[in-house]
Amino acid sequence: MGASLPARDPATALRCWAVSRPVLAAALALAVSLASPAALAQPASSDGEAQRAELFRQGTVLAEHGRWQEAADKFREVIALRSAPKALIALAIAEERQGKLISARVTYEKAAADARAAGLADEQARAQSGQDSLQKRIPTIAIRAPASAQSVRVWVDDAPVAVPEKGPIEVRVDPGAHAVRVEAANHDPFRTTVRIAEAERTEVDARLHARASGGAPPPRSSSALPTGAALVGGAGLLTMGVSFILWAAGRGQEQDIIAQCPRGGTANDCPPELKDEADAAAAMIIAGNIVFPVGLLGVAVGGAWWLVSASSTPEPKKSGWVTVGPGTISAGGRF
Image (cartoon, rainbow, N blue to C red; front, side, top):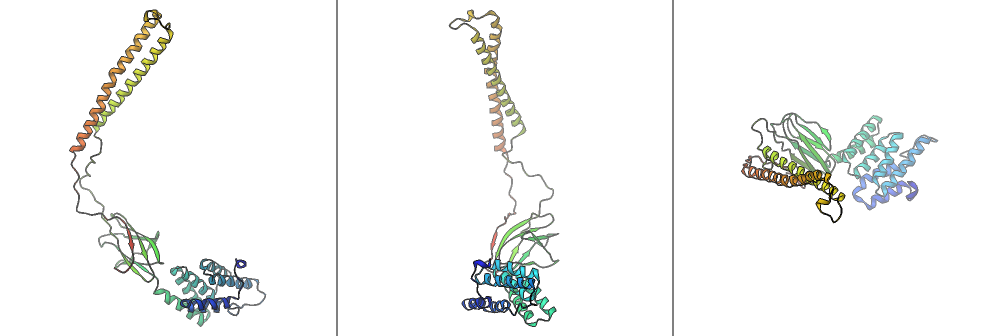
């Protein structure tokens, strides 16, 4: 990774970067102190500490090029070898620049606690300053459920949220889009997506509609096929199928008989023993021709029955409730 980037003294590189980006001057001043060899000085001839120093140098160069995710990964490798407040502060800065404000706050908190335990006043002050700055920038989603809802459960991005006994349910999140799901006993679940920016507070009114209990069954849909119509129509279709079978069998037997008679001859020229078979074939063809209209009539009656039933079924009455489906809340401001 380091071979693809300019080999530059990390302290000098970060100072130049701070000059070109005054908004981050304070954070970069901290990074400069972290990147200096004196800040990472450890007992000589330690392979582990030499590796930490090289990883930290690579992380600062990646940060110089705005590659914050890769820089954060390098700082995590440093911490995996040996955690220290200064390395934690560097990781918190990288997480903050990625918009991962929640993770950055946790990292700052650990850096401050470790620095306090080690008696490092400067590092503690820097970590506490970063933590205090983030407190004002982390957005909040406040979720309100109906007072009548019982056993309310809430998830944000599929992670369960603690529900207080009273007041709104507040969740601190990173800026961006977040999926919110609210459930309660005997209520339909509520789902929505909240888009929120830094330092914003968005209130979500969870519209939980109570499920209907008891009462008359819902009216039958007008498109449902009545049982009688289904039976008559089904019998008609079955009869039509039988007529096709009779007609096809009779025609097939008739063709076999014709093939055994002399070509160009009359029916009297056919062998006498084929007469019975010919009569049977003719009977099947006639039966098929007769049965087919009967089946067609059954289908027509069943269809007419269904149409009459559908037109006479009253439309269900609409209730006074209006169901509001889940949507997307654009948190452009407070409300």
